[in-house]
Image 1 (cartoon, rainbow, N blue to C red):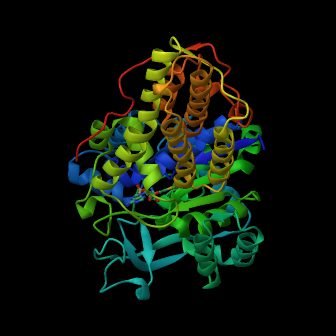
Image 2: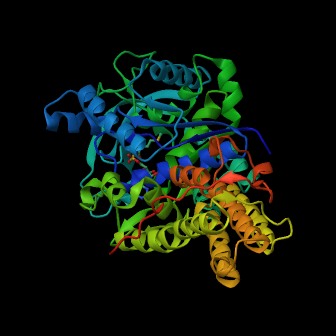
Length: 502
Ligand code: MSP
C-alpha cells in the first residue's frame, strides 16, 4: 500500500567516530528508505547526532576544546561517513540546533502543564558512558553492566517525569499489535520492562549546563535522553509546523539497536503520551554486531572505520555484504572474512558474473542489441517468486532474507544459461529468446537489489540498455515480467564486482 514512511536512525553521540556498529543501523534504515521509495511511498529519512550531556562535556574537556567544538568536529565525521556510504537521508539533525531547542522545550512543557513533571531530589548511581542511572541490583561489582566502568554517585535537585503513571497505557499499546516492535522478542522485552513496574525518573540536571535549558526553572537543563529522543519530532516540524508534524508523525518507524530499548520503547512513548501525542511510533530493533564476541565500541578497541572496508569492497559491495550477512534482529558475528566470502560468492561470482556473461553473448550473437524476453519463459516464475518473496521480507524488515531471494533469481538465471548454453548457438531466434530472458531477469534483479546496492544496480540498468534512473521505477508494476521490451543497446564493461583475494 502506498503511503508515507518516516524512518529514523538513533542520533549518534559525538564523543566517538563512526564505526561499523553505527553504519549497520544506518545502512538498514537507508535500505528501508530506498525500498519504500521504490514502492512509491513518500519517504522522509532522518539521521543525525546527539550532542548534549555529561559524556560530551567530559570528552570535550579531555580534548581541551568546548563542547560545541567537539560536537562540530564529530558531527561532520558522521555526515561524511554517511555520504561515503551513499546514505540517502533527507535530513541530518543536530540536537544543538535552535529548531530542536524549541521542540524540546515545547514538548516537555506540555508534559509539565499536563501534570506529569514534579520536583524532587535524586540520589543514584550514574554511568556517564550510558548517560543512565542504574539500580544497585543492576551493577556488577559496582560497575556499569555494559561499560564495566565504575558508576558515579549523584545527588541533586531534579525534576521527575511521572513514568509510573503510564504503566497501563504502555502495556495496552505494546499488547495491542504484534508489529509495534519487531522482531517479537524485543516487544516481549519491552513488555517485561513495563511489567516489572516503572519508577518515576529524573529528567533534568542542575549540576550541568551542556543541555537544553528547562524553560520553567533557570538553573536546570534537561537530561540528555529527554532532549535526544525528541529529535524525531523536531525533524518533522514539532513546535514549528503542526501541519507537517500531523502528516508525518503517524508514519514513524524507528530503526535502532537493542541497547536502547528502555529509552525508546518505554520512556519515549510515555513522554509522547504525557505531551498529549497519542500516535506512537513503530520500532525495528536489531542486535549487536560482535567482533570476537564483544560489542563493537570505542572501549573494546575493535573499532573498524567504514571507510577502510569501502576501500576494499567498494560502497555497494560493502553495503550488500553487511546487509546480507547479518540477519536483522539477533546478534551477529562480524568479520572481514565473512564479508569477503559473501562479496565473492554473491556479487563477483553471481550477479557480476551474470551481467558479464549476458552482455558478452548479446554482443557476440545479437549484434549488441538486447532482445525481448519470452512471455512464457521458465525464468518468469522464478522472477515472480523473487519479487514476491523479497517484497514480503522487506515488509517484515528482513533485508538479509530479501537479498537472499534476490540472489536466488541470479543463480537460477546462471543455471538457465548453463543448461541452454547460448554461447554455443548460432545467432537466431533461439539465442534471442534466451538472452531476452536473461536480460529481463537482470532488469528485475537490478530493481530488487537497488535498496542494498544502489550504485551497482544503476550501472547494471544502464549496461543492459535501459535509460533513465532506476530510482524512478515503481514496484510492483516495474517488477512484472516483460518490462524489458527489447531493442536496447547493451554495453560491455569492466566487471561490476572484481573478484577479491583473501
Ligand atoms: N545517542 C544515543 C541514541 C539516542 S537516539 C534518540 C546512542 N548513541 S550511540 O552513538 O551510542 O549509538 C547507538 C546506536 O548505534 C545503537 O542503538 C545501535 O543502533 C548502533 N550501534 C552501536 N554499536 C553497535 C554494534 N556493535 N552493533 C550494532 N549496532 C550498534 O545510544
